[in-house]
Length: 104
Image 1 (cartoon, rainbow, N blue to C red):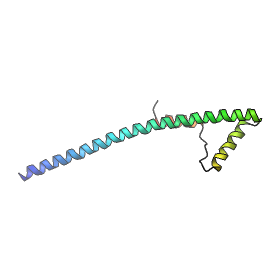
Image 2: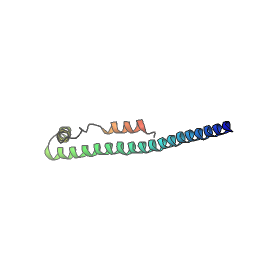
Image 3: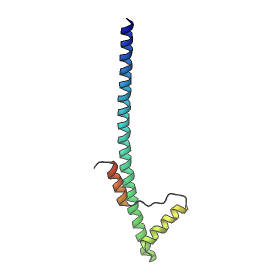
Image 4: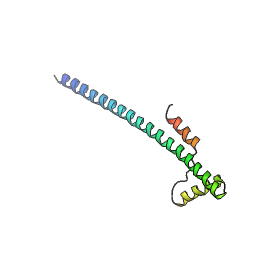
């Protein structure tokens, strides 16, 4: 009888451990799927903001007679002066990161 109880306890423990591993594995897969979707959104947003920054710099250069690259650098310097991280990622870098983490 004792052996039967020990075998039953081992079986229940094994099932609980196996179930816990299955649950955690499934949860990690769901979390990874969410992370991949977030990476797509963030990379696409960085690429879009880079294009927007380029358009604004070109328009300001047209209105002021300056060079768009100089204006872009100046504006990025002001961002840093305001305490933020320097935006230096290009559209191509954002697309590259997106491709590295998310299969097409």
